[in-house]
Image 1 (cartoon, rainbow, N blue to C red):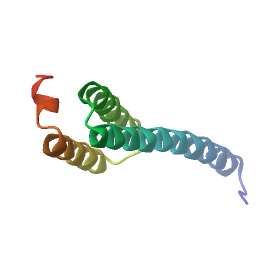
Image 2: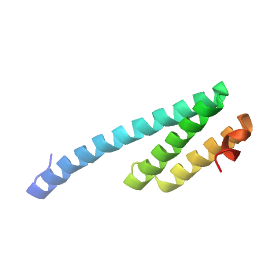
Image 3: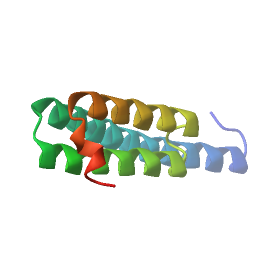
Image 4: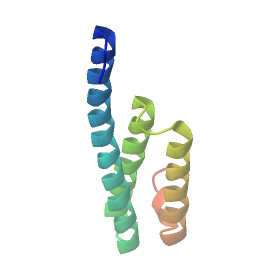
Length: 95
């Protein structure tokens, strides 16, 4: 248990940050899972929309500090490669 007022405050802040980061990570994982499922279904419009949402969620999680920047870059890169492999026209049409 915290012995000083500042330690008590830091403990409270840590709990708030932990809850916030957990919510952001959960949302991000769901977005990634939905994007992979949409790409696997080979529905072009659905896949493009889910891909865009997933990239946005991962980037936002990295900017908020819930994900390390390297992990975010790796997840986006792997999702992009997967999308190009399964649906080669998915990313070409969006450029």
